[in-house]
Amino acid sequence: MVAVTDTRNAGRGGGAAPSGPAPAVTRGKRGRGIRRDGITGWMFLAPFAILFAIVFLVPILVSIRASFFGQLPSGGGLYGGGELVDTFVGFDNFALAIGNSAFWAGMGRVVLYAAFQIPVMIIAALALALLLDSFIVRRPGLFRLSFFLPYAVPGVIAAMMWLYLYTPQVSPFLEFLPEGTNFLAPSTILLSMANMTTWTYTGYNMLIFLSALQAVPRDLYEAARIDGASGWQVATRIKVPMVRGAALLAVLLSIIGTIQLFNEPVVLESQNQWMGKDFTPMMLTYNSMMGEISPSGSGPASAYSLLMAVIAGVLAIVYALLQRRKGDA
Image (cartoon, rainbow, N blue to C red; front, top):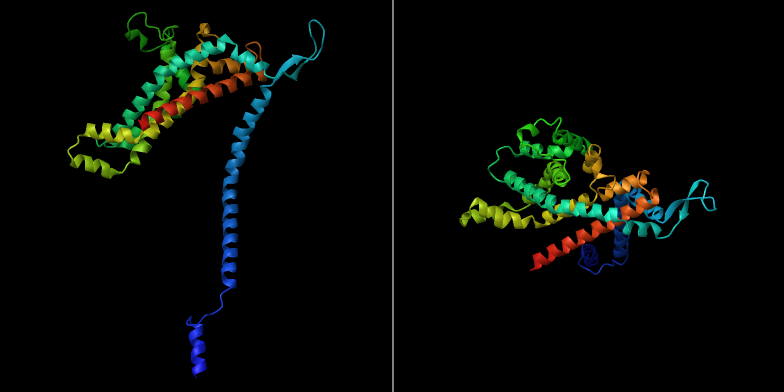
């Protein structure tokens, strides 16, 4: 009887039972589970990764390759001759792009345009977001949709609508403005384009700020009000500093988008030929690709586009570093 009792106690854990193979089996099962979870994750990621490679990475690689080639006549002789064929030209397209004064003139216009348009748009978007996040607006959903609606209008359609409003012969409101007002004059054309893009993208940036504001803990607002802070103090000393990251994102996206300014100047140029086919770097790139500007072809156009990407990246990095240094100060 004593032996039976000891055996039962050992089976219940009272004795030293051998447990050698158990940890190895557990590790094997855990490893298979991790691999299975990894495969499942990659399967969910695969559709996005494939589409991302097709619509983003592959065009970039094709553009980089095309920038080193140019269309040159296949025949020899003094006057050339023969069909145009893609020929490796090295860095000649980049030298052409860097040395093109029309490119840098267009880039200067874009920078001047951005220096005015981006601050106005960001401040307006932040003001609208603060308004919707306050207790003043009873139905924020309706106003949020109204502010965002211009962004849903296709860019070319919006540009054509503003061209109609700017054209003196057909504009319904120019007759009520001082005589001689011309929104399409060389001295005001950049301001007119800035108004067009501000109307379109303010609602989009407003949503970025509003999302950041809604992520701020409400306890901070309640604590500030208990301490006697007014609504203006809550907005300027709590809300605005808390959306600094959203402001950085909005400005970076605006810088990149401004370098690619295209729809508005193209539509305005259709009625104002004095602007030329190279008014902005994006117009120069497109018209070079389409053969409207010489030299043309995919080679020079790709060189222009890559140079624009580098400039946009440099401007974005400089702004991000300045903001980080300002935040650390």
